[in-house]
Image 1: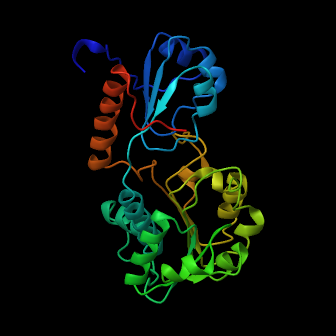
Image 2: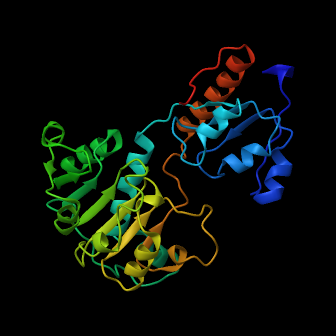
Image 3: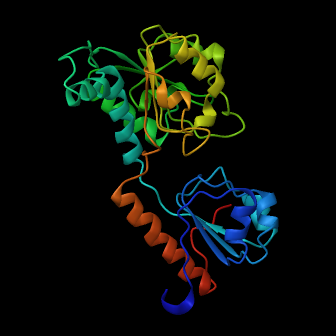
Length: 295
């Protein structure tokens, strides 16, 4: 970009008036995922803003309609699905084989082989969502020899059959008939809170819940209560309603939770594409031909 732009990097967390003060003279804003809500209220306080670039082609934290109404162009970048798939399996293996407590015990000269793991082969994997990430998770589950089922509000038998998975009769049936349930839905008005207390109650006592999608898919209060009361075996979580996760939050301390700090997209390849394409988007906008514009 050369001398066309002056770059300022914000690494500390900003909210409220501090966020406005930090951004109010910016013509271009590049945001990483959904860490900072770009609301209509915030946009109204950023009179200089003309271009907003986000990593990925979908960002639920940006009020795109409000941005467009103010003449702000919103652009995205490509994002590879494989890193989220890989982390999903890291969490599944982590909780079912108790990798963290065993590793911690080894590092602290604790007991040797203090837990009893669960086999993936022959276990039942339920997928809430069978999009591009869910299908990849399904294929790996099948390679492990798992029985894979799926359900979503708009999943039909033909799509399930094409992916080689069983179509569960209902959301409740998916949870009740699975040893581990992994979430792979897009967060929207239809899916927000789709996993509520009643749905969590369907998960068997030995079952695990995995979420590398979006925290808003689950009733967080109900999830914390269910985990605290050990109504099912545990959870592997990479997404949270507040990020960074506050110090002392139950997901940091509950012994049956394996929590990672939203690492699903954090790989060198993704970052090269995120920031490389962000620069491309800025250069294209400066030339009057914006690229990867979000609707």
